[in-house]
Image (cartoon, rainbow, N blue to C red; front, side, top):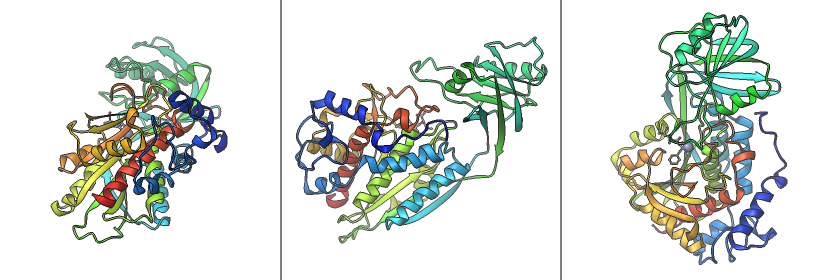
Length: 458
Ligand code: BES
Ligand code: ZN
């Protein structure tokens, strides 16, 4: 996606990294870059010195946020919007499956159906954006100059040949779209507004809920795209595509235990690789996906008593569809063999206030996964930076919890678990704007050491 030009890797978040490290513990510089910290020394961003087990050291000497970042750039910068069932989500699935196969894993692509949808791509100058489009609006192309009608719900001006731009008035989308179409507009763009529940979050793209068909395309734009248009886009072109008969996939990669495993037990490390429309899903959840790929590499030859399974879910943003499909396909014996599912969702934001690594379980109670993370945090010296377990679902761990499997969700958030970065679910969730290498490294180490501890000893 041309929206965020690539920066050279070595220039990437060095400034932020150093500032973060200095603020945390007065740490010196070069030796603390992720992936270069000494295994015996203090971890980057840790509050105090570590007491690692040999298993921890095997993980922390191997995992590197910089390596994970290469995967994240492919997923978020190159592939971009990974909306479930679309071509770009498929490209991501194939990239993930290929990477894991090359690492020696046995990989299965598990298909399932997902609902039809209309999506739009817009071009203005050199920009290329995606937005959601109303099911009851038209598909096809439109091109024209933009007329900004603000919060109007009635239109008197002639809009022949124009693209009408509105600010969303919730509940009035039908009136806005119909009024503009009746005055000759070629397409209708409705810019989303923030919710009253989370006013600090920028508004994402949305599917305008029309009550009756409108004869032109009707798009629900993210606040960011509305801002960019209003800052000086005079004309644009767009195309709405009706996506039907869609299939999404879970990517399931397994590596058998190297030691006797008579119970056939397995540890799952997972993330979802789809993103919401319009968002390149840098932190949500390119970060968790990249973490899984790097951890799969780092642990592939380490001895274990349990199988290690890396699961990358499709269609999470649609309502945990991929993870629920997977869990449904397990018979009771297979479900009972899973000792825990470590779910990684939003594990690297650079939003300054999201400085707490949260341990979340659906019921708020500790389980194998949250206890293993708390133990790893203690051993690595990260306890001051973690909170929980606290109660929260709304990500793939919920599917496992519902089936009676120990599961936790792990992510960087603010003081309260509801405090997410302002660019959550928006086009601005980019590698350049929303990824901290330092936090990604801590996430890699915590998940790596905890999951490996369970796989080796548990
Ligand atoms: N990554 C988000 C938010 C999140 C992270 C929730 C970690 C819980 C733990 C997730 O992808 C998301 O957007 N979830 C939806 C609900 C889901 C059922 C579609 C949400 O929170 O609105
Ligand atoms: Zn997510």
